[in-house]
Image (cartoon, rainbow, N blue to C red; front, side, top):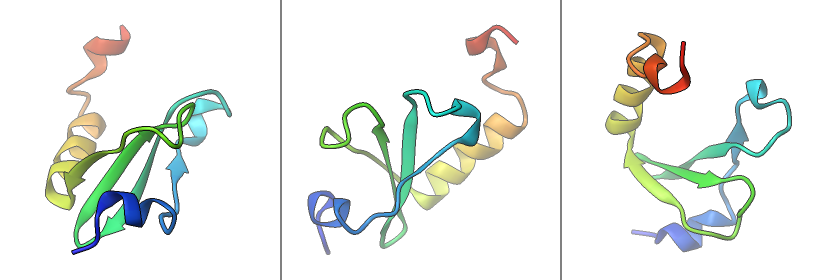
Length: 73
């Protein structure tokens, strides 16, 4: 299995359009059912990794408003 570091250069990183071009987090598929997340200000820095199931659960929670209290909504 490829390491996160070897997949870094091949990954297609995406940032939410809602960030308006500001610093934000970026996500990418790293292959083998792994999603990577990194700080857009430090693209060579650490990458957090999650299984596709973990990431899907997080996205579903965001859509359902489970984290709105963190941003004062």
